[in-house]
Length: 482
Image 1: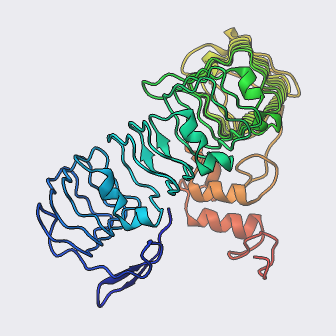
Image 2: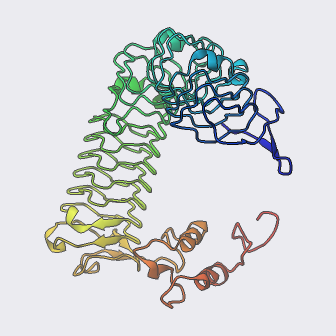
Image 3: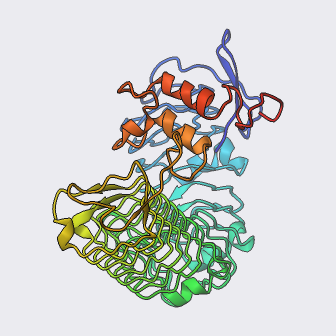
């Protein structure tokens, strides 16, 4: 939550513009908190008071915004009129509802970001409260959440009737909500905005997701947590699937064998260690997706865009990637046996020769491709090339491989075209400034002096693009459009 402070350095008085008590004045802490101490009206925002015995202290009217009280003993602490939005009370000992109820934040119905995890919240009254970003991951039996805003709230125990009583549910906006490791069997999420919500490890049998928005929603697993039991039919019923927008969805570790994702936008999706063998990913957008350890054996991926995807330690054996775009993808230790990459764009990809037995590279674009041949004899791997397979001056083949004899076509890239897209633009400039790619620094050394420096940048701007610094749009003129 964004907060604005107006501070006067001479008097050390701060005005908290988003506090329920507008324009309240706070005093700087006179001393560290201690049991029985008097700290009325003091500013303890962002201070860490964890693991302390703070019983009977007076914090009435204090600013405790984003303060930490983890596992501290808060017996009979006076919080009357205190601001506690964003305060972390995780595991606090003997903090009760009456204390929270007495705060200015509760009275102003603003408990955004408060952390009450590890506490028994049975019977607490959160009706009408703005709990955005709060953590309520313990017992909530008989707690009143009617009319509450619960976007991005992390729950650990919740009944369906409680969720349905909230303002957020009624408004169909449960974005960012955390319902991980919960039994949600038969729950009704029809038409809900579940973007960026978490269902990691949850039971979703017979849950109704019809018309729900699930971009960025996490259904997969996590460390020591199994994935949810989401079915293909449930996913296909969502509005996001119907509109082909599954950006950022989390399906990590899930069994998705044979699922239909054709033409879906799965950019930046989390598909780590997912089983996607024989899945239909034709024309899918997988730009920036994380697929570490994923199994896509036999997957149909014709025309898919995997630009910048992470695909280490996975398998694409037997997959059909005809015409796919794999620009910049990381394929370290990925099995590519018998993969069909005919017509695929492999610009800038690091390939591992020994993992590619039987691969078809007919018509593939191998510009800027770097081949690591630590193992394997190229002549024994039966990799298919033809005259429409192209490479440039920066392609690095394994020792002993002759691209001319193999029938490949040499198609040089312009000097300064570092990403081999046949034009000089901001993408090339960014690569030069970033000094990348690291395995081919000589490509950036335009003056051939053995280093990549400001002089190479000068050459690119002045000599190759024929412009000057300050021409942001590279049109050769310095004017208002820059």
